[in-house]
Amino acid sequence: MIIAVTHVLLPFMILPMLRRPTNHSKGIAPGRPNLGAGVFTTSLKVTLPLSLPAVFAGTPIFILALGFYVTPALVATLRP
Image (cartoon, rainbow, N blue to C red; front, side, top):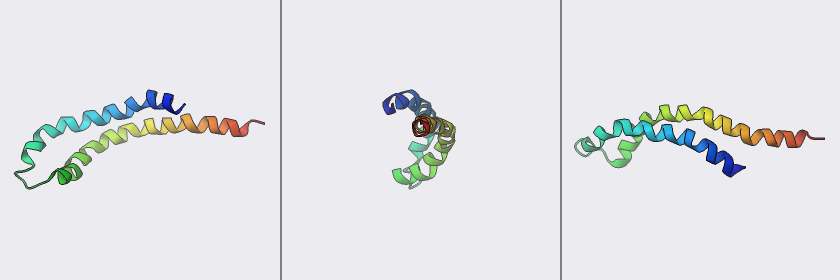
């Protein structure tokens, strides 16, 4: 069940997260060394905030995935 749910729902979480940073990163990477920012600083202060909307878009998918695991557990415990 874990493999099936992961196989079905993972693309809905990963695809928005992959698409979001690639829109903005092309102009940021060449200017990074000139401004004195390292890879970690750029990731933390630029790429992460730009990726947050994609994470928020994937949050309902995460909640849906929790339902896939919680519902069978509740049904199994309520069975007489």
